[in-house]
Amino acid sequence: MATAKKAPAKKAAPAKKAAPAKKAAAKKAAPKAAPAKKAAPAKKAAPAKKRTPSAAFMKPLTPSAALAAVIGDKPLPRTEVTKKVWEYIKKQGLQDKVKRTMINADAKLKAVVGVSPISMFGMTKEISKHLK
Image (tube, rainbow, N blue to C red):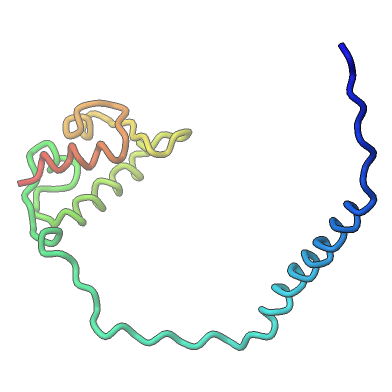
């Protein structure tokens, strides 16, 4: 195999590299000085109308007997059902310690969700089947 000789390095190339370094240093210095010069941000105008929740979320739904064992038998909106289920999970310590998105269901919760462990996202799907 024949080895090819490398061409000698050009002396003009290092001079070109030095110029961008100065510009980069100047750019880095500018953002640091800019926040100090800014005045306090102006207060945002209050929204004209407060956002109201969807009627579908606020409609009281009756839980099934299995779900009633976990959250109670009163008709509740979906948002409250989710809150009550999470209160139960936290109180019983059912959330997996390593993978926090997984729920290790006990006997009561397993009657609702069907399997253990279950993902918190799959759990909400299973709970919706128990609401009328």
